[in-house]
Image (tube, rainbow, N blue to C red; front, side):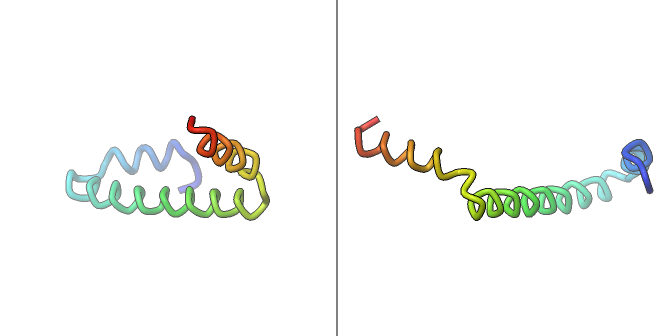
Length: 62
């Protein structure tokens, strides 16, 4: 499968149980990708400003 269209067509052919299994797998796959992106953003310091702002807000009671 080399395109989104082909993947969509294959997913449309899944039985209910296969679709449920695929959905469970994809949820885990997507969550892992999200976690890796957040970890990379943290390591690169891209969230530092947001963290500093949140700490300031907490200290100031907001």
